[in-house]
Amino acid sequence: MKKKVYVKTFGCRTNLFDSQVMMSNLEDFDITENEAEADIIIVNSCTVTNSADVGVRGYINSIEKSSRAEVYLTGCGAHTKGESLFENKKVFGVFGQSEKTRINTLLKEKERFYELGDLNFVDDTIVEEFVGKSRAFIKIQEGCDFRCSYCIIPYVRGDSRSMDEAKILEQVTTLAINGFGEFILTGTNVGSYGHREERSLASLLKKMSQIRGVRRIRLGSLEPIQITDAFEELLDEPWLEKHLHIALQHTSPAMLKIMNRRNKFESDIALFQRLREKGYALGTDFIVGHPGETEALWQEAMQNLKRLPLTHVHAFTYSKRDGTPSATMKGEVNGAVAKKRLKELTDLVDANNLAFRKEFAHLPLEVLIESEKEGRFHGLDQFFNKVIIESTQDLVGNWLNVEEYRVEKDGNYARF
Image (cartoon, rainbow, N blue to C red):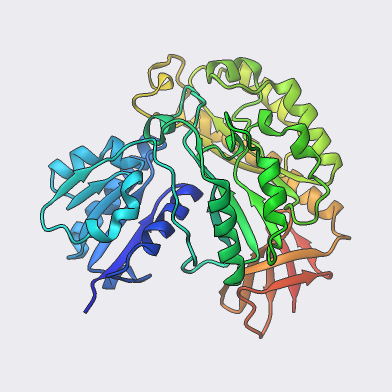
């Protein structure tokens, strides 16, 4: 009998894609979605903060206590905590992202191994299926050329490099034939696709949209400076999701400088206002409580946030990441203060989101149903808002055009 492999994925959408690449290359093993029956567990780790490392280490410790499965570590954490976990015999093997296509061979190794590979690799695996998913994730680039003060990722993912365009289009075509209609473009820094080459994100999107079966394209996080004129020309296209996630990280000019960010708030707000006029829901990343964030700078940030038409936010309190400039900065923010500020921010954006959904309640919602729980089906509409539908039919994986629904604080509700 073939050994059963369970893949535990931490962190971002890029890791979700990398996990799928590994599963696609497991020729001599069976994949299981049930951790309890696994003979082998692959931990695809995140290391964006010290807390992320703690979460990965805690998971590995729990496996050691509750399972006889053989454990392997990959992902970004392989570069930061892999050596210590390997030396302490917490894992049988450690391998870097560049080695994931060799997973079938690596899992047959009889001796323990530690192989980080290199940070210049480019994926070329064609993924034909996404286990347990209604949407397809397409990685279009890897690495990052930015050097934000708080971020370790460029040092564990390498500098930005783009996947081959022909391979990306082949990937999308294959998945579209296999029934996928929504495609989420992901990467370490998606908007840098084609940088230093004669390619652009806008051109790639156009070519993807012409593939039969492609119904909706969603994008991972973009930087403000990556929203080019060519990209803005696509804003009226029906296949582009009416939601963009644009990473600001902060709205105080002084804090942006401390964070070594490239964006400027005054140009950020002009961009957001243009996008809002096009009917877009707008999200951002925001770090609260970064060293140097005084009360005065926080109040300035909040006043600026109130000027932004934000409908979604991925906000979190600052968590130290060893090895980054921010980790040694003075002016640390008390944890309780940071949590209070975080709530102030999220309350503001939650109110914005409710107001946005009420304003656009006359529009039908284009919903891809992703899951079901206790007779309620859950999906996301074109604005990246949650939709909950009651139905006696099995709707998972279906596209619905929802014209009648009620707007509630925690989402939009309908019957079908």
